[in-house]
Length: 112
Image (cartoon, rainbow, N blue to C red; front, side, top):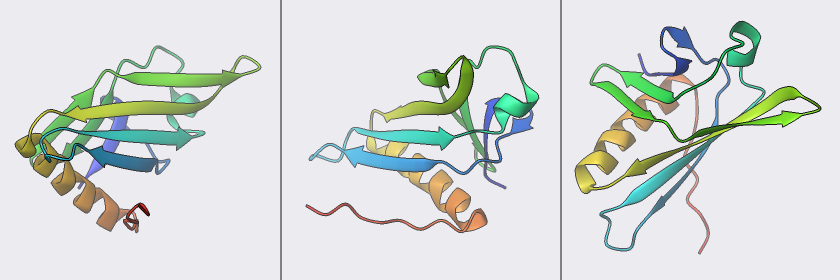
């Protein structure tokens, strides 16, 4: 089962918008996650220190996570996961394929 967590052991129920970009040579890439009103705020009031992508192959993680507040209340979370080589890219894509299948998501290619 593919899942996303901000706190280890606490699954995030909000399905994010994910935007992918990749260098022209295909070596580097970045995935940007946007969570509108994530459920982690309902269950946890402490500091969020990372984004954890967990599936049967293991765990991918990033510490590049930012919370957005409006009138002192948390509203959204943005996170970036950087891929530095083709193996990182392929591993991330395998995670996203599993996560997408389990959450009825689809991929839309950007118009160029």
